[in-house]
Length: 344
Image 1 (tube, rainbow, N blue to C red):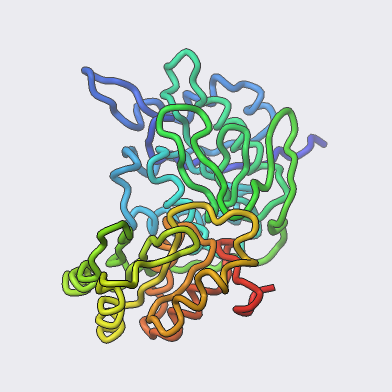
Image 2 (cartoon, rainbow, N blue to C red):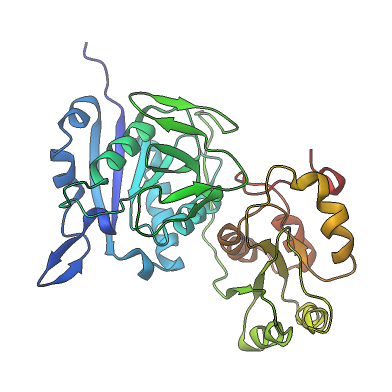
């Protein structure tokens, strides 16, 4: 009896990996995943592939409504495959992958996001290598996470960030190491969930009126008020370093009080990587400075993940206390809580 081939669902959504110039303009979805697979013959021999195209878009045009569509599409088909691959553009790939991490939880198998820096017709394109590696991970890696596979690296979606717009090395992992590398074989390490027979959980609500506000020298706390008055239901403040805010003559505290009165949660992320030793200095450097302020410290959670997570959290509850609890709870490897604040 022939050995069963691992079965993988490939979902195309557009992006450079599917792009082709038509009349001098880029068109997405012009090169199908079927065409790409024809140039990777060994993949067809090793795995059973089913391919569909959900969107044909530049990823910069993909909105939260498409994340919800994608989550539903994956959830109701997941049981039929050994893993899922989603191809899309790199601009918002990390946002979408992070959204799926929160919208489909308790995964029994991997959901893999990938794309390419260059279109498939480029001489030195990364399209084929990234797609091949993503399929390998979806089909056979013993992980049950939503991950990004790019440039031979396997990264947890909630820890990945786009760091390069024009060169290879597109994504990097922040706050947690990559969980694997792909060369001839897949090599895994670090903390991740393994395949199992658990039942996944689907969430179908996102609060889309969440905003990111960057803190900078000269920042006026009235900007927080303006966002609240404009209809923001949640705000991510991107602070300095460990999450520091300007509190002297900046009206920031006033703005935070106003948001709290209007029941708009404000959480603080960082504008940089916190480094290996942040946990040991957080309380003395930042913790006491934020005492008494109506803010939610997010410690080592990256800004993009914080934004998507708040959308998901506020899609589940509007209770301010519950929002704080959920934002500081770890669901998909997105946050490390300092030991003094209840972490391990």
